[in-house]
Image (cartoon, rainbow, N blue to C red; front, side):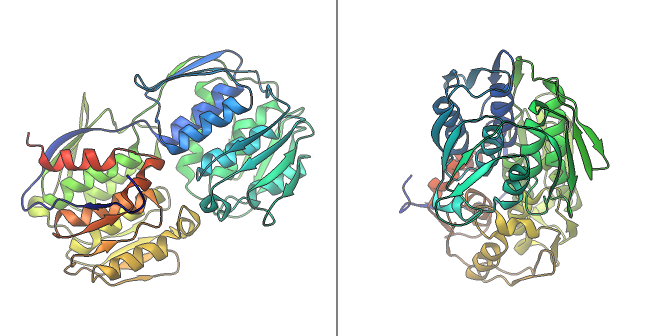
Length: 433
């Protein structure tokens, strides 16, 4: 799909009942790619997400000299790890709009004594990097900024990763902390990290620490304020299966809520490593019933698609804010979404984007101290701006299920994490089981 294309959302007047498969998790895929490259043997990843973000990550690893074998049809990737070393001592990589790739690969390059150029899309150059660059500078990395200070693009010169004690501010994104944790075991001494301020999206740190343990590296976690990564550890090559993406599953579960129908999301389970699996608890508050089946997670939406507004802290699953915001116009009372200020620094200022696009649909929303308050109403047909933000495109398509004439501009932006989202969306609408 091109930037000029528009997706007309198919509306429905009755309950949707469908089964759907979801691609692999973006968060797990990109962590696994980094860990595999840092490991001591070959790692083979299955159910890998092939999206713009992950392809930029894989391409960057190839440009850095890693042997990467890809079978996109079978969703397999094998990487020969180099035990914490980067094969090429100099090079140029392009991370596109991928925040995880930008932050994780920058931290990995800090392990080397080489010189590298890191390029990015205009969207990514506007996103924060300073909270990661400051501690890396403390650890001996030299940065030369090509446009704006503390922002991509930049060149960097590593001087060997010494380890030691650093402080980090992870209030805007947990990715800054995850990046340091993931590379920490390859220092000359233990890496000790102290948080300065609040921790954004704590479940993503829990995911990082668990994946590190899965590959053989332990982290000492002291109440999510102080972390120690002992040196001398190394990731071990293995076969590792990527879970389906729980964040993307949320859109399909929400389809069942809006229509009063049911959805079976195959391969997704309540014991997922991903924090966004807890979104089902919010959907339960809306009157949904959730069951764990051997083949996946099943949700029955509230009868007639009638549900209340809720007051909820979404700090642990900020990517689901847009999904809940898309449900809010149809609630019987106000929806108050709290503790999501960090989404202002994602692919777009998502707080502003939500408010603007709801207004376009005739729905009143306002920013609060830490979030958004949305009043119920009767949405009207509109053409939705997506801000080149995959989650805005996917979430606001939900509104069109109950409002004929909703059109999503630039639907191709979902290629960042879910290239065939709208194909699967349409099939779910058309499916009857």
